[in-house]
Image (tube, rainbow, N blue to C red; front, side, top):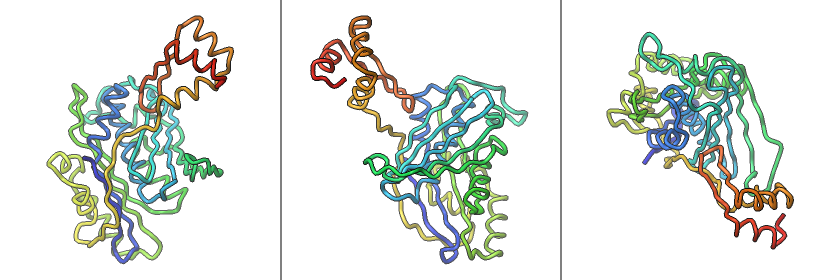
Length: 297
């Protein structure tokens, strides 16, 4: 099972989050049937969103959205404090040749555009408040750098962000996926910051050690080196969508009586596909008839 941890280091002046997301990303790719390069991009965004959402309160929801002019067109991920994440891409089949070094051309498939972070509280239980929306231009399209740029510019938190997805190019089969975010809080010692920067610059790529069996705790050690840290929470994470048959019925009924009657007469039923997870919900003639008879529309 995939795991996420968050904690502190250096007397609370450094915040750390790390996650293994191999199974989570594999499930997203299975559902959306993404191309290899899009799979890498989606996996990075899902992992980064989980990490950024890890310190939220119970009723909070975090959405990270990339609106891009590259072939992928856009990527969205949404996570809560419970470790559940879901996401989708506008063009799951986009593809580009690999770079000269053999790596996926994620920056090329993303291109330029905008990087948005939306924070909401209490939405799912009806306690809706105006969401906080932060945005910055995409600076690299590699996604980890875009998270770091957003945190520095929009939330004024200097951060190191490492995200990686290792795929078998033919399948694509996810061999390893995970990430780390290290944040420097007010009062962080300059010497500590320099040590962390030096450690990260000499560290192996995170997917290589995840592929060898590393845990989320190992990823933190990879980034912090000799600096001690305290884990405040550990949780399981997974790709999970809150769509349901009941929500599908509610959405179809909201189209109005005429539209539902037309579906019944012309199509003998209705189908709805969830954009976040590709789950298909089918309503037959009896379902639509019941909807009309019970005056739910």
